[in-house]
Figure 1 (tube, protein in one colour):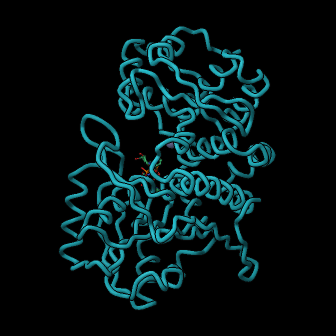
Figure 2 (cartoon, helix red, strand yellow; figure 1 turned 30 degrees about the vertical axis):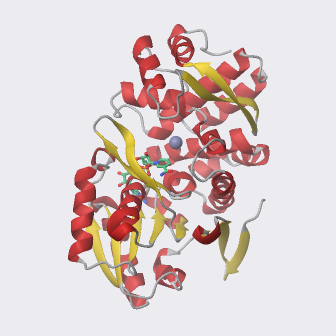
Length: 377
Ligand SMILES: NC(=O)c1ccc[n+]([C@@H]2O[C@H](COP(=O)([O-])OP(=O)(O)OC[C@H]3O[C@@H](n4cnc5c(N)ncnc54)[C@H](O)[C@@H]3O)[C@@H](O)[C@H]2O)c1
Ligand SMILES: [Zn+2]
């Protein structure tokens, strides 16, 4: 598939996906047992010195020691900076804590910041790296499916503000992304399934062959079988790299990745970010977007059915929770950063692997979401 290069290390396969962004280019490494040799993979990025590992107590307990040992093994001086676990802590208070840690560790422009954790840690550590001393080199070591296929690649970093998600941020690319599939062995099943929603998204919007591979290997993916996960995660990373190379700063094409996200963001916001994991809300949002596309005559009923079957096989929700307020959905949709003149640049499905952008009024999206017209099809 695509442009990933494979390298066998014994019986182990390590894949490399390049992200070509001129002087901000980097590689994504995907394989098993990569954490113990992390130091080796960081060779050439910076000279060994202080390496600040930003993580949370959950991930530190599982992987903090192996990472610190691997860094020390090649001459780095590892310092761990911990922030509390959870989306609620992707905020300015945690950022301040990271800056304090970086100052205390005497991090310099030639030092290294290592983001070890899920998307929350990656976004926080990445933004700290973008801003501390006006930029310190950083690497992503993502440990959730969502972070491995989405948030660790592409350079979006940031924190939440009380009035909205990701309102404060920067584009700042990592120097490398190191994906150790072994970390997924400890991931709670619900987090694994939610991450797989984003995997389904890549197939639905960009690759019929990826979607077919997902359909074929549903059970093995759910069982966290590395031989099934590796090519799928590699393909997602390659697709994300392609999108980011074409439109790094989301001036237009990168918005393709928002498939299912318009409604997902509204559902997350209106349920207080507590009822659904992000991927679960995205599963509902993608189903909605596909049904809306079908209603507009853009895709066949069979396309919608295939999408829903895959999501449901992963145990993901597909139906909009009852009782959401139509006016508030319209408000949230219209207040999205990407909305112009109350028209949403909505990602519609034409087929599995093919989309098109449609301008749809926020009010219409909200009306369809609560009107019951798009339940099933
Ligand atoms: N920057 C981007 O382009 C981008 C894209 C998508 C999402 N995001 C952001 O990503 C965040 C969501 O990321 P997430 O879904 O990874 O959530 P998360 O970082 O909160 O991780 C989910 C949970 O899993 C735990 N965990 C992480 N790795 C583990 C492991 N290997 N074993 C056991 N537990 C583990 C975490 O401690 C946490 O409790 C959101 O803040 C979202 O805005 C960013
Ligand atoms: Zn998402």
